[in-house]
Length: 174
Image (cartoon, rainbow, N blue to C red):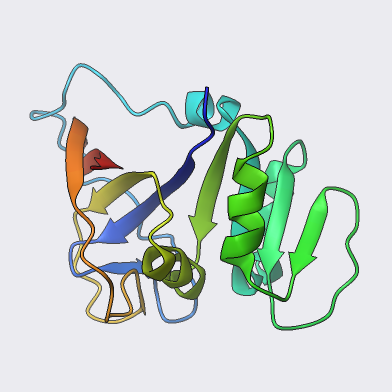
């Protein structure tokens, strides 16, 4: 089975993936389960299907890599840093490195974020699947998911899930 690069993240209704300070405590439902679908998004199951995680330096600085100690983790950075344990720092073309990684045997690749990193993958048009949780909040400001000037990418909706006001949409590239 061919490996996929999967973007899986939450976004506010107005398109932000984090508050201005990088916070994400706003990523919660509204507590109303009347529209819930029977099927739920099983994040733990998703993590079992990936063996590689890609994130930006801001996520690394927030210690988000520590949640993935049993996975190969690539960190996009402009700095020249020493690899350690399961952490691999990439100061060059991260998209090229991950495309090469995708050709190797293994499970899927989790494109974790942040926005600048995701933007480079969008512009290279190499994301195979998008799992987007729309959080019932308008932040008004923060770190945007889409930085603009992207190519047109046609998607197909494979699944939708409602869970306490959060709409989870799973698309694959057409």
